[in-house]
Length: 63
Image (tube, rainbow, N blue to C red):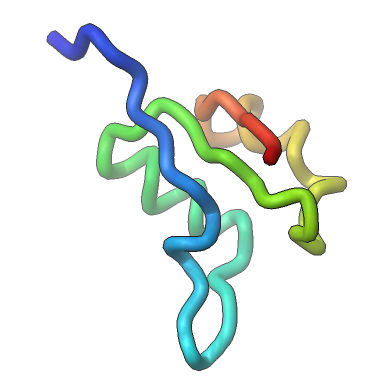
């Protein structure tokens, strides 16, 4: 049983080739057991934040 929420920062999904789409990030995190994602304020997908909880069950944070 996990006692602390685990979340990931979105910058871990940035590579030399580009950034993984938000849907891919959330799918990976949910399947790995994470409880949330923190989005950078400069993310081009901030408008999709409402989907994060509804579609993947992840808590969302912004920075």
